Length: 149
Length: 139
Image (cartoon, rainbow over all chains, first blue to last red; front, side, top):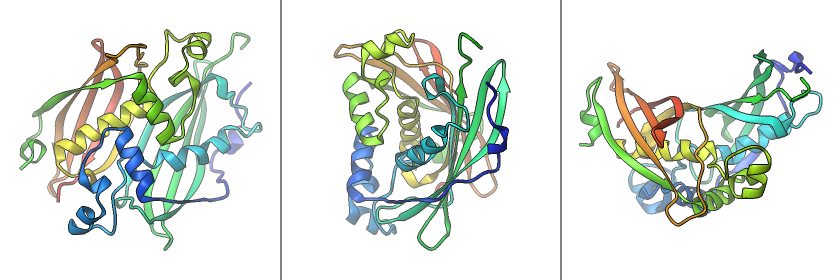
């Protein structure tokens, strides 16, 4: 079944997430990022930052759940059990810090069919409490065609 | 000065081997919130046609991002990073884990000093990340 192309350009209600020191430490430890800027508040402040810095891919902690809500919308027509994550991108306007309360708005950039597979590109625009841009992520998911397709 | 700060376009960056064990996947699952069982449950992974438990693509991407951040000497220097997930990394149920070879090459140095780095990640000789590109802005 082809995906609903009317999803392109749509956005979904914003979700808020509060970035914490301990979550940054936990994530940094999980990916082996030992730099003091991820773990040591005093070191981060001494380097001119307001608090510890999130690792590059940390935003998936909140952008993926926000995206998943759209993925799971039955109206889109994507069968998550057949979904493969094909591409991922992060673009940072500024570092993400502990203490940031960020807002994520998900939108669908592109819906298309490629060799019988459904290809959807989701974008997350993340802003801070002042409304300034923090980062943007894009994720392209491929819904593999079923045996009965 | 870091390796990356000194690098000119075309220069290869010092490679690194990252090892991924089942324990790493469990820890990453918890930290990231991605609890998809194909990343920790052999039964589910094989049921959906995979050769075994595979690493989260996002975990491999995180290791590659950390590699670039380490070369830059500053995690805030990596201002953009994108990749394609081309092959899964199958992580065996043993104490050794799966080895991922990370490498990089500076492809561009802009007038303002911003570096473009092309990153490679291979497992058993085959690429697991494709078109992996980092933008690095050194202070």
